Length: 94
Image (cartoon, rainbow, N blue to C red; front, side):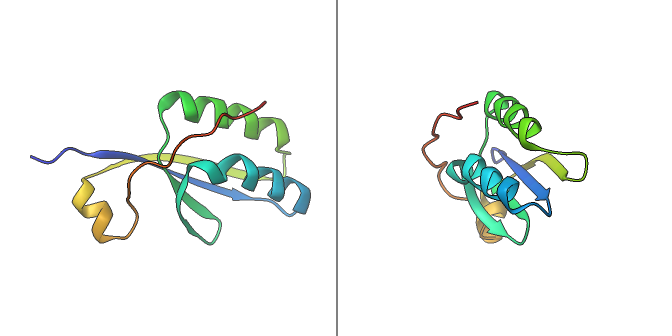
């Protein structure tokens, strides 16, 4: 039985360019795959907590933020081109 890998999909829709740039700066260190407005990241539970807190401080009522945690077998994720070794995490400054 293969070990599942925990991956986090983060989707953020905003019409404000300044908040978009702030979002990109926060999420980029964790991102392993990017397509459209959705990023796939390796995040620990603590990373997710801090990132959610940081994003909530730059979000407005009009923004849409969706964070979804999924578990995939490493082979399945690799076949889909979504996996790789976790990137070195950088501290999130709040």
